Image 1 (cartoon, rainbow, N blue to C red):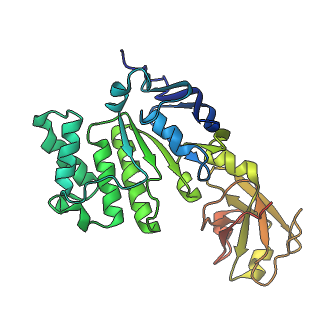
Image 2: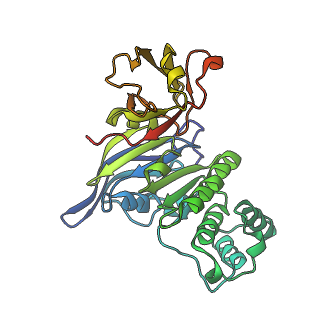
Image 3: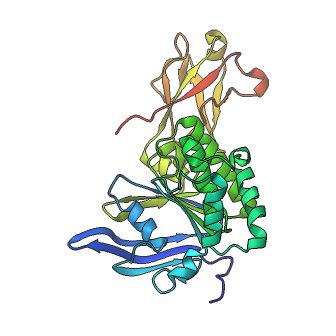
Length: 321
């Protein structure tokens, strides 16, 4: 079979269904993921996330519908699909009695990586995830974050077109999660690999180009993180300054959002025009904005040279509906 064209979806499902007797775990999913995209799959436990990934990775057969990965039908040619994907499981799947290098050598053997290339590839992925100095250590001596990094190294060893990540940072501390995502983003830039991931962490979903939210086996919404945030409500921003008197005299406050849109709030007689917000003791009242803001975004008042000393902004949780 010829390779898919560069513009063809690298992952595609049409009416995908998976049933267990009378229970439908996946109920007619349609997806289209482009090459090089970071695609997020969000939803509560039992929503159908892992079942869908298992079908795409040929671990389960669909009850109905069609799934294509790299242009190949997962049911008709599962072997061809497996050679083109990598997979980081939700649960640990390393042999902890083997060393890091031995785990990778075994994987290279299973995926028919040419013997002449194995050592070079293994050294390369170990360096990418900063485990080259622990290559000879047994995996049982690794921390949870190190094991996750090794699993990512194993998943990309055979140069897959798509790397499936099922809850890749589950149970890891925030610092380790950030490090894992640094490796994944670097991998995407270097190799142009497509990342298809599930997660429970909303902040982690920010790394995605698009997000599909699944519930009860159906996709209920699919869009970019920015569009999804804008659709569910407004962010709240708290403005503070150490120089209240000067800030009150400034004719306008412009907030630069991460999406490139300026939200301008006029200040009239010590109040934000059109808002029931008084610039009080430390301008501690809240302002609602339509688009998300980066935490720590600077509030620019008119010309940058006229910025009130010490003025700053803090991103607050959006109010519950």
